[in-house]
Length: 339
Image (cartoon, rainbow, N blue to C red; front, top):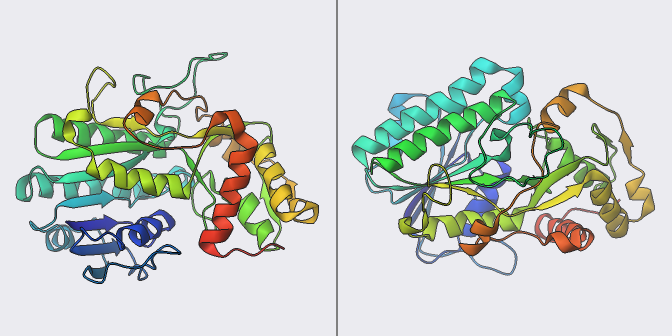
């Protein structure tokens, strides 16, 4: 396999690249982003494939010449992870359109002409759904009509439609995964409206204060880093025949499994892992800007089809146990300190 990962300097791109670097079936792994991505380190207790050739390239994917040079005919799989996050997309509409739509259109047009049928994995977002009807208790499925309530959700949906149409026409072989909010993201806060979800865990574990900008009782659809990486790799290896149109509107879309949890529950796990003084580093300070975006995201999902296909996520029956496990995974994988 010859794989290209865009957005590879970001948290998810690095986590995915780390896992891919251990795969003995991969011959070349090209990592690209607007800055040169760091060299991936294999996950703990694993070793890198000694035969894989890893290239790291700084590239502007809105430039036609760049796309032509990177997206070559020898590629077998592409992960399109680059994008402007939710909060940043809402704050800067022109930039969001340029990165989240224009660059995707440029890449897809190039691939359908020069590498037809190539497998593409595209992480989308539950932000494409938007607010659900008042008092609705129906879970979101692949059949739920998207009604994005943000520019980010709209831009993700537009790309979904393009990818599905190119797959329908047999031009590309696409797998679209709608991701829950991922915790715990390492590093600095991102431009995502959901950045606080990781911040209220990551910063206190490092002995730093953090702010909770939403109602601690508001439920959010979560997943872990390990689960997302595993699911991204699993999607790559699924045969195209599993995407049945009777299961979802466009046939190539999957809502990934996750767990519905509140910030209060996550902070309870923080106190168990890091003691009371760590939990006390988090203070509530509401942000209307963040609440406007986050409160528009659905939090009840039926992901039975995804699980049937072998995708993984936490178990809703043990939210507290899942949350505590995710925090311990973060400390193990990223070497975070406590206090």
